[in-house]
Image (cartoon, rainbow, N blue to C red; front, side, top):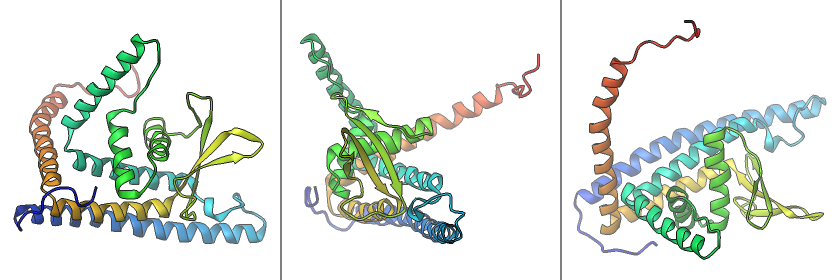
Length: 262
């Protein structure tokens, strides 16, 4: 990925890339400080509780897991946003949906069932592979569990693939690099059950590296900049059409009856 495209002279492209990098890194630094602070307190509290025999968790690395999941969801939101910059917005999503639908219809006529990832999942997979070094199969499983399931259902549970293999989840504050975003067998006694591991601090650092590398590509390569401009233009158009409609809708909506009376 890096190195594809044409080097352009110093223009608004470099300024826009620098502004985006500054904006993204400002948000990331706030997230990183929060994660480090909360993690230190959580681990210290759990270690003290374990020492006194009152610990709710045996492993301090797993302390305050609900809080960890909130940080993980924030990281995947950033990955989603970065992947939109990379692909240039809705046009790529629509093109992918059409591509996938044609192939699924063709397979159905041939008596086969094929399900391709959604456009959002596919571009996030691609981004994680190119900028975070995550294998596409691992990236897809992580996105399905830690992004879609967590965002839309608010709970985590296992998923079943087409070969009846079960994939579940495991989150911790920090993991060894070879364990983070890796799929490993849950127990040798159950050869069809696997875990997709994720380290909260590992993921936060992955996002930092991805921001730096992507914005560097944006600064250097014209094709990346064209995709960036398409997305920003699309977002401005959405704002211009969305705001008046929302003002009209809110102004014309009667007050809701929260008590459910009459």
